[in-house]
Image 1 (spheres, helix red, strand yellow):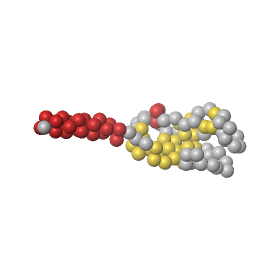
Image 2 (image 1 turned 45 degrees about the vertical axis):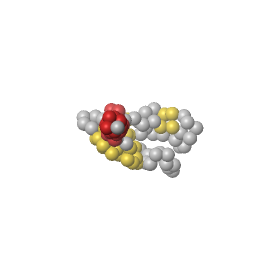
Image 3 (image 1 turned 135 degrees about the vertical axis):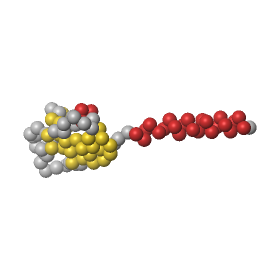
Image 4 (image 1 turned 90 degrees about the vertical axis):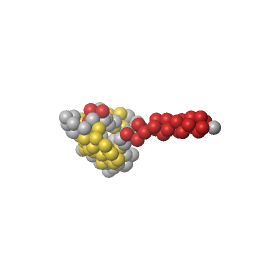
Length: 98
């Protein structure tokens, strides 16, 4: 019985321990403009706020119009010298309806 209890405790500890790395991931906290928002005019910049610092080089943005047509990737305004919690992109001039 003690052996079964010890085995169960070790198994439970391994299950809990294996889930810990998932807690370390950062996530998008907010963006300006907000994701999936509809605007009267295209913004000139996009700002993304993360819960933890991220490498700006690993963050990308895609631009689609209502029909799903993609546009060139925007230029990253945030320098990639150090991890940051806020990443900003400068958008190209976009046609109406993008």
